[in-house]
Amino acid sequence: MVQKTVETYVQCPRFEKTFGILGRKWNGLIIDVLLTEGPLRFRDLANKVDKCSDRVLVERLKELEEEGLLERVIYEDSCRPVYSLTERGEDLHCVMSELHDWAKKWYTLDDCK
Image 1 (tube, rainbow, N blue to C red):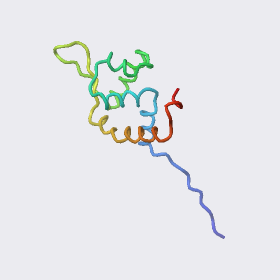
Image 2 (cartoon, rainbow, N blue to C red):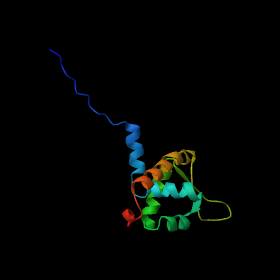
Image 3 (tube, rainbow, N blue to C red):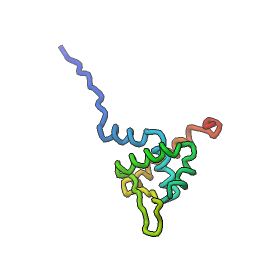
Image 4 (tube, rainbow, N blue to C red):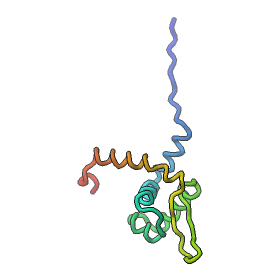
């Protein structure tokens, strides 16, 4: 008699962690803005991700900084921080580019209203 084995799908923990970070509301948009615009002050970033409240934006920026995806730098001539992507964050460029291509293929602007 032949026994059939059922393979159990196991999610890769690294993929799960990555998806948890990028799938969190606003994180992908924050990363995309910084990839496109480069380093930004908080107010400029908030204006680009305009539907996100300041409180939530602060939380997301702290999370992304803790994950090593962005850094908060305060220059000597200013007390206001500038947010920029780290090498790890910049490395998401190809991922975000593929997501843009996928979105253009499958959604119209009318779908986004």
